[in-house]
Image 1 (cartoon, rainbow over the protein chains, first blue to last red):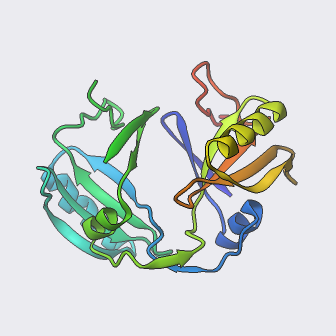
Image 2 (image 1 turned 135 degrees about the horizontal axis):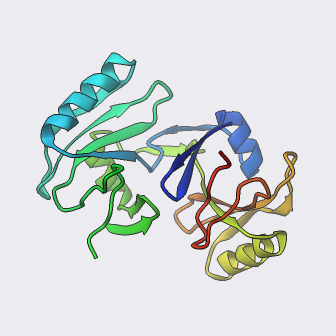
Length: 105
Length: 105
């Protein structure tokens, strides 16, 4: 297991079979997992650059960066394990000096 | 969409079909999703109490609280949408005064 501190949250990577066993469920499953991970960045240009970086590192482009109906700009890639990551510029959700999202009050 | 601040991370709830559409993938999928959400608490007793609270609120018990091989104590429930939540006492990962996990340096 690998743990990463992400603000007040720990992000942990497990082997799929180990996680299913710990949760007491079958590891069988396919298709849409019902969740995505999002990485918010500071500009539309940063969305495009981050997606290029992800693809260069072995990710698969799932949605090229483009305007979202709600006024932001985002794209998606799948990592080598198939997890979906959104790369997003959200002009309504500020980032603090460490790059963490701070929801408006 | 509902957003919740969780330390430096925002936790967001979407309708499944909307999230799949935004990610440009099919919403079809079944079985193990490959991820779980964990809520760390301060004691073994708090694990049992939190699992009881989750079940009373409509969750389904998936693993009753018990010792884990790595020395902690944890159980799992599924929320009404089927997402798996671990409730965990980890004596090696301290919680700060707000209850957020702080990985040891």
